[in-house]
Image (cartoon, rainbow, N blue to C red):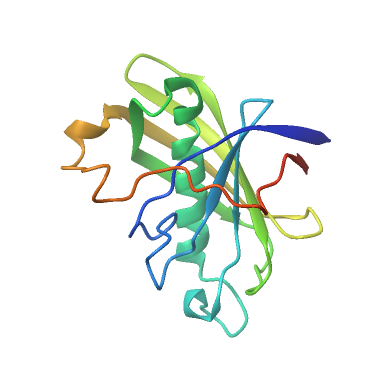
Length: 168
């Protein structure tokens, strides 16, 4: 199904997942979709491998956690962040390196203090390689860390390659 991109979420400087200046990072872009799901797009490299040519399971867990946890930002407009309480991952297929991959995350349950969500890591052909389910505590950013937006370069970085829609 074709989904329209409604917004792009910010990146930071040194985050392992979204940090654009982290030499070992995934340099992931996050796109909010018209169905209230969050799409992450990234291309893992050699430094992210476990077995030769395969993405490390810890990195798979990390990208699923980040995508599901960030999905709350669609409705909270960045005022509330998710702090992981519980995360369960199922690995279904090996994940290659050096290919653009997609992760979908969504909120499945939402209360005043917690939210839950699910997500899938998709291979280029659309095959589900891993799934995740997480529970998160809703916390304002100022209670999580001393986060200086300017110093961390927390901003939306537009690119001419940013898609207007995605086929899922």
